[in-house]
Length: 157
Image (tube, rainbow, N blue to C red; front, top):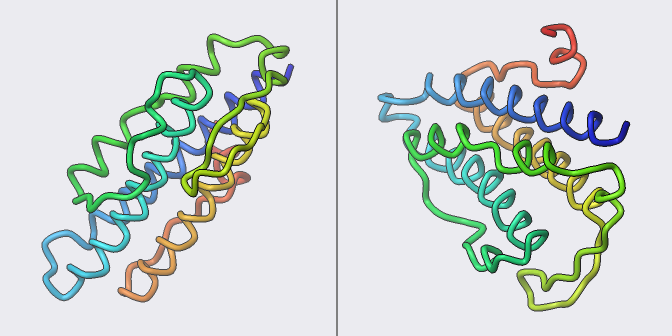
């Protein structure tokens, strides 16, 4: 039962990120919003890079060495949004796998252990946090941010 819950949360995250990406496209080609777009794309890219970093930690593949931050443009954001590494990974797991402890070192070099479920929950919340920052950037630039609350997602199903 827990795997379907997490799959739904990551589908929601993908849906909400797609809506945010559509809003960011309204800033493109407007020189007066170049700085806002660059800042928003940096946050958008970071959200997606974090998924790869955390998946690398979970899988033990060494992908955790990927940078969390990079200067992305709108095309880069679009490419990143098309990737669904956690949806793909979660689809291969059982509920018991969610309780597996994952030992890792954070970006400051500190060792920690978290379960797969804790990491997945963190990622969904991490996306929400940065989408809120992007929504503020959009609002400041005069572009109404789209509603991306979970309840709006449930109404589209």
